[in-house]
Image (cartoon, rainbow, N blue to C red; front, top):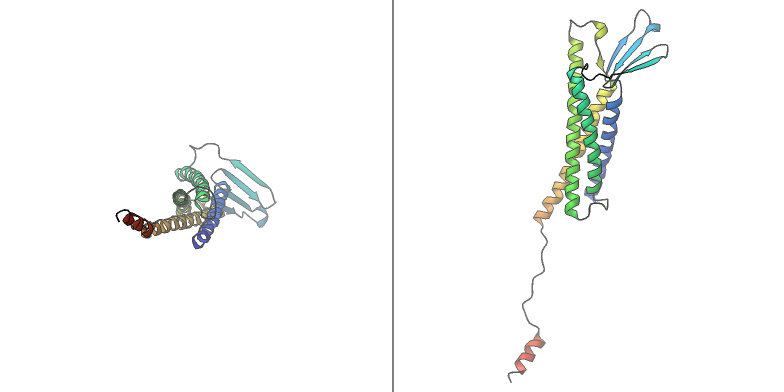
Length: 219
């Protein structure tokens, strides 16, 4: 029961991580630029994401432009797109396989198959978390380096947006979930090796009635 509770906790963390990674991939606020202008009325907030760029005006107007050209993007944005898509796919596969391998479900058949499915789900979550953590950290590094560069005009400097922080937190949740799934499966496997099934001893003694009957034949 304790292992099942730990797996349920890991599954909840994985669901939160999957939702966060998917939301971070789609949100347009990976980096933010605030241009106040001459007064507060002309404030413009520019949001840039992996798939679109949006502009929010202080008057309440909001417009977005999709990024159709992949080759026109910087290398770190192209890598971030591929890595975040891979993280979403791996986390979805991890959800399916871990559901089969959890102790509280009746899927998967025998315990050995469920143990393998549980471990495979943990590996998928670890891979998804790593795939989501690398692009977000790299993207943040590029934003900070551009912000600290004195040759870049102030109007072209950006700050990390909420999608980057959401992606980092979600990736960490996926890594934690994967570690929990893998360790819980390894504990069950090691327990089976330390305590193998004992077969009942085979009795070689003959019943007393049969022995008495065989002795009577020789009298």
